[in-house]
Length: 291
Ligand SMILES: [Zn+2]
Image 1 (tube, rainbow, N blue to C red):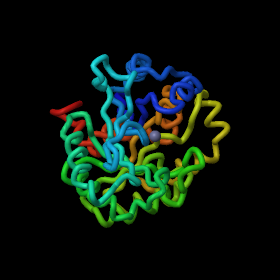
Image 2: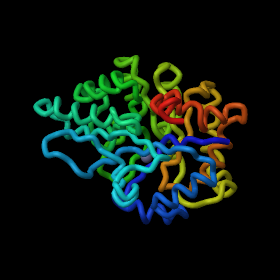
Image 3: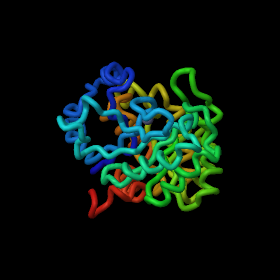
């Protein structure tokens, strides 16, 4: 089965090297390329990271922060596309046009395929009008807005802004923008399901439901009830064209996580969830430009 990983991190930021080894991986492009080849993963979509290099006073597009990960000339390898990260707290009316120019420039690149928002970590409501010009940009470039929904790591952010219901309001106000609820809003699975069921422009990625290095058997036994809960609500939603596989690498062991996600998806829907849906949600990946 051919796979697109619709949500990962390709970054030397923070503790990603240590996190990768805890998941049984090495946080290098060569290692990821080898895992991709072994698992028939043809492409990964890396999220623009928070923090990192910036232009003072301007909301600057955040890259995956791949320095030390990319090719020697600093480019991303061909098996990685990316979403430009938006730092909500940096958006400033006075420098908005400069910021939008910078975002437009990266969105003109073939491998920049979406925008990524972190309202929970940034402690800003997604409904704050500061985000509107960026949603308009997503519409103009026909790329999705990927929203971190669900649990937050660390104590800095605010969970209330990471709740999947926040995506409902954005999806209603911007009906021509595709919104991806990253991590299925976990553990607010029921609320995320209602949001996806109501809005035809809302999609789900299944990344980040687990972290670390484990066997599928161990994980499925330990988290049987939670996996059953997720399976139950995916079945209730019954919209398999809205659901995408993602790993959140380097947080998790990829082969084991693929096995876990396979247990959530009926066989007849796996091609869509693991591959086809990503091409529709991220159309810049689709032929003739990409895959
Ligand atoms: Zn992530």
